[in-house]
Image (tube, rainbow, N blue to C red; front, side, top):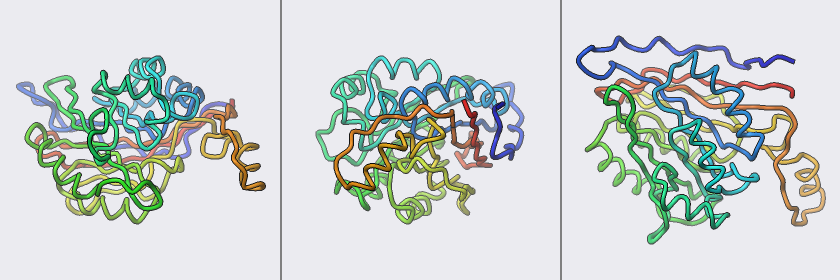
Length: 285
């Protein structure tokens, strides 16, 4: 079966480019949690089409589950950097020691900024693109139904204040379980960052919008991985977990190819979001 989009909404055209400087606006593609080999294959399969249609200056993906369905390795990280510009993460970034070592030497792999010190790695990064464009990417993690780490709201205050000294264009990946916590952070940062995008549940939500202050928002980007799976994991294993309540070793599934995320158009001078467009692409094999 041919690749087919589940959402066919298109972003508005990018603003006119000023010959003496950066364009008036630019686009960022943000992909949800990449789950194992199937997720990396989804990036290879679908990113060329997304790049052709949106012409993004930056591509960001959450890579905390990219190696075998949990954690990250240097080999997998370098493979993904052939396709994306920044890898965000979450609570599973600590699951492979090699991934922690890679994060410490590769600044484009970031972890949630609100882990208590002295956590390895960094919670944000500023990347440069063509025409002098700069994008700051900040990673945060929620506390509802998750580890009791430092307050993401106050951590966001401090981080955003510093990042805005370099660029008003700031993307926040909020890795959190509770939708209410994600929505609250979106409104809390509205007008101070370009976008707040949720990760962690691996299920794309349909609440994408630009908030009143000019911040693009979606509760969860979803994932890149096996479509015929339970949030990227082999469905038989997930079912057994629910039937038996016993520990099960989860493995990434391989059934079908699926990718979801958003394209955000950002006004260069102000960092305000002009639009957010959800994309869900899949193939049966």
